[in-house]
Length: 369
Image 1 (cartoon, rainbow, N blue to C red):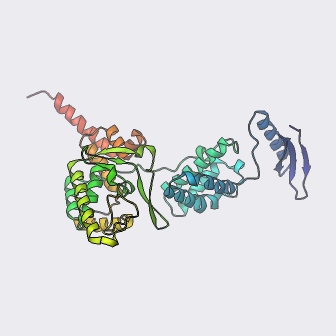
Image 2 (tube, rainbow, N blue to C red):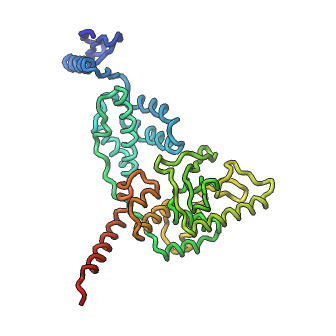
């Protein structure tokens, strides 16, 4: 490696060039001292066996390239989410900063700007997570020597409160489902804890009526108006879920009604994804948006507050814990990545159960009168 040549450029900046592995690398500085310091740092990095950092690359240019590389490996919905956060939130704030100069304070400023723009702390945390993943790849490839997003403090997020529906609430909701298919969908959601995409992507080959279980292997997604089946959310999302009597009966009724609908539709029956359990009257996949609207109508008739369809999954987990099911079993059934994630989501329910356990222990140790 050469010793480097430092000189003053016509634009007033100082520049130094040094030969690194047969290539000329250039560093710049506002003063001669700053330029020499950068030159020495580059020489030290190369001398220590670290790749030389490209000082011309910006955060925006790197993230654009990174998105193109990771998109084929991501689920369509995840890739769309990443692209929206990178192009809509991260690049406008810190995209012009040189990649190697990015500081934790810059990542913190980006998250603060996201929230000042009216978005939630959770969205800001998602931006940090995406930036952290991208910078981890840059660090692995030797483009940077530390991950600024990893070192920046994440926004404070309030622990999510699980939705707890009483048995009476569940009965009222099911009674308020005017559409029999909606009622069956709600029964399966409450008794299995499936995510909406997992439920709408369920196929009859995934249901084992004899062994009273179903296999979560795919999830329904919609991209550019077209439906397709994708891999579940994570590796732990691929799981076997036991089915209670209510879910088994709901699925049997759905299969009978689907066969009758196919017979009635005749030539109008079009099933772009074969073997789906839940379809429209002409064989098309069920729309998540349409399902949500029907669900809100049923909630209103039942006198219940507005909920997301996903809240039925949360209610399933809470009801299992309230019924005394071990949290590790709940975690596996919901397909969570870890028991600690389940604990964070259902901490409030677990705290209530601790009090019940303490009361039971107190009664057990109470002396008979």
